[in-house]
Length: 102
Image 1 (cartoon, one colour):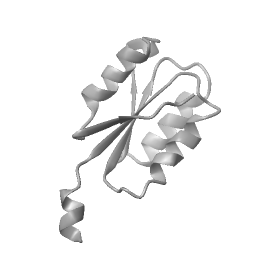
Image 2: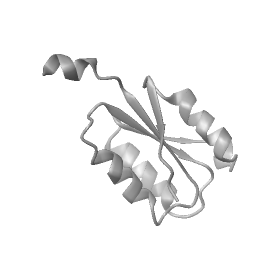
Image 3: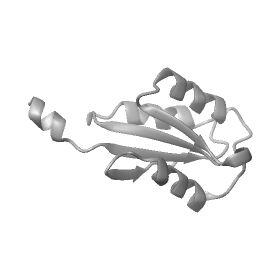
């Protein structure tokens, strides 16, 4: 059993969000609820102006080994493609999964 866990690949879950205050906590909690244990969560802020930034930062602070907060320079809105690329470039896992937060 231990050998099987060690051999599991790291999955990088990349969540791009923009003003997703109503949904971001539910999206984050859905990742925590997974039964697969070897994952990291990258929260990519595409320039939010609502409370979603603070929620994401709170999770990153509370779970620094599992959750990372990323944003574009100057907290700018750069769009889905640039945000996805930012998440992928920072991902440590061999498997990348996108989780939409709307």
